[in-house]
Length: 158
Image 1: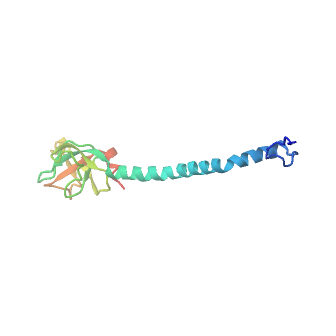
Image 2 (image 1 turned 90 degrees about the vertical axis):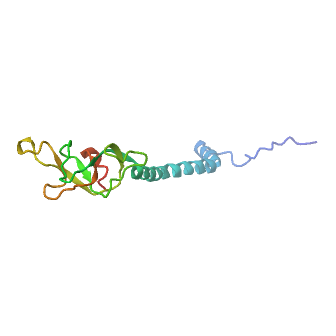
Image 3 (image 1 turned 180 degrees about the vertical axis):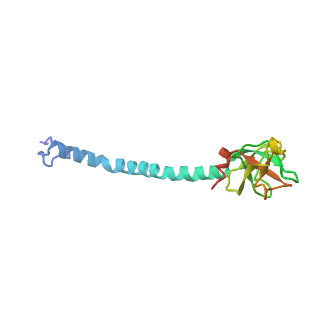
């Protein structure tokens, strides 16, 4: 006659405590679970690096508002505000697809040499509220410059 014996693998010790049983159960499912957790942790740890590199690339290629001005021979122009700056370059780094003629445009936010916008004299001194790119004694003239507000200029200071 046949014996009806169970095919159960749990014929080992039956005196396992509940915590040991949980450890055995968790240990059995632990390898795939830990593999997935390590993958997620690795991805999470890698994400800030990718975002930082991506942000840096975007910052290097982004644009900020500016105003192109053709400076005359005497270097005086208007309007401007105290705190504005001029980009000191052969030609301002205008963003692709933006106007390169005097007026509103956008320039690349890359480190650039800038000069302060200084007063060329107020109405009392006959200056009529005009400004220079640079100091009174050494200022730019006869060229196209980009004038940026102090807030926009902070993105160019690297």
